Length: 115
Image (cartoon, rainbow, N blue to C red):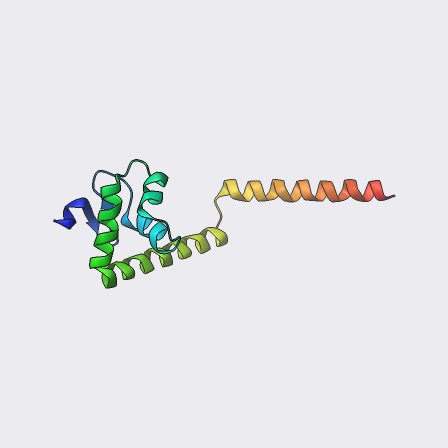
């Protein structure tokens, strides 16, 4: 049975059995990056070619529900990136401050050189 290839952990969390890789990872490469199953298996060598093909076949047999699954996953990713942009972790804030300081220092040095 095709479902035997997967662990259904939650409505929005389907993993390839024996891996921490979600089906959305394989399907994103297949659908949005137009990668072949062989290329996907090379990117994720812990997966067998059979597992990659099984994931794609599961998608093709359940296209409507899995397309919605992927849409929700993409939307969640967008929301998380937006949240991080609005509230960056402290290390990112520090790196942005250092970058701004370096840019100001380079600008000051360039103005001194132009004189």
